[in-house]
Length: 547
Image (cartoon, rainbow, N blue to C red; front, side, top):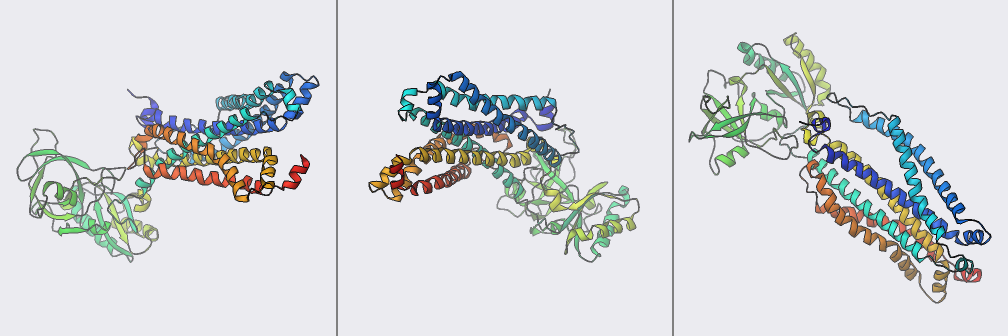
């Protein structure tokens, strides 16, 4: 028994969408922390004004309502903008991820509108409550005397920045392993030269004339100017194959092995290498001795250190224990490894190739290698097929490069959403990084503004610009360092939930766990640079005269 999500998305549906949900909330929390920090800094800057109002009789709860009203306006404007951006983004997402096998409604309905409204209200309360609490704790006398009892507020500001940095690291590391996983899949070496190859599926005539028809078909296509070679096969590279039990010369029945039917010039058309023996040719027919070709992985596993050419093997086509075996097949060649029956493209399994002339099927994949751009020959090849057999049609005809691009319709259920997550997660990470850097910049800038007098005194008694820069950077990078440490530890736990979506990459990938903090450190240094330059431009004479 499966839920609809598990059937469509896979057994880890809850984890996949849960991770995206968590990423969304991380971004929201970073944004709320940003606004809380900015509002807190604004409240501290108005502390004397607020103290005067309180001393003149203004109620604290009245001012708290004012802060909550201001935060509600900001949150409301943000919610309206977010609603329209979300509608546009969801429309783009639905179009980009459309599938002929999935019918999902991504429209933003009234329920989504209520959800956005509730989130906006929650955000208003969350980042409006912090300055409100600050108002309740005002010491009016100290503030009117020019006191600076803002240590607690500064600690809170540093804590908010630290939380932002930690969340940003978690998102960066999660996005990093997902992107690296997708690149491992997308750039995997599948053992063939995919450029300038057209592929399409054709249904062949009755069994009695299939072999001769394919020979004529192949000759006609290779006579087209620009065509280098043509071949047929029961499956395309990467796609599934037929699994059959087999036996070697010792007669011992072994577990299943992948098998694939291929015609003459199949390996030459795909750019594979024949290490020993020969390819299939037109002499491999039903009337000739049964033969087979094995890939290098099969030869290394079952005949290590030996020449497989001339060895024998047999298949058990029925698959059941009491089914009779097929005829003995003589190995006539060893070819390079081609990925088959692995949608993630990470493994070369042992593979046995059978000649089309001895195993004619009613439907085969046509592969055509061209010397020129393959797209320019599509129409010519189609018309040649129609002239040869008017009732013959070719389906799913496109370049092999196009067919090997990531297509969720062709992926196994467990990895169907790999590309979606690999695109969405960096978007969340970039937004989080941008918001965290803005928050850090604002916090450092406010700190420099509050410490103008101190900086002026330091410069008046001989502090150099380098020393002032160190003070600013030390204050700005301290929460970054703590946030990095917390974020990296959290990443080790969070990335484990992404393991089912990863291909060829560990959840604790050292490259990602090194690049994510370095990226954040670089952005943090840039965020501290502007306030540091402003601090170095402080004129001690003007500052001290104003005081």
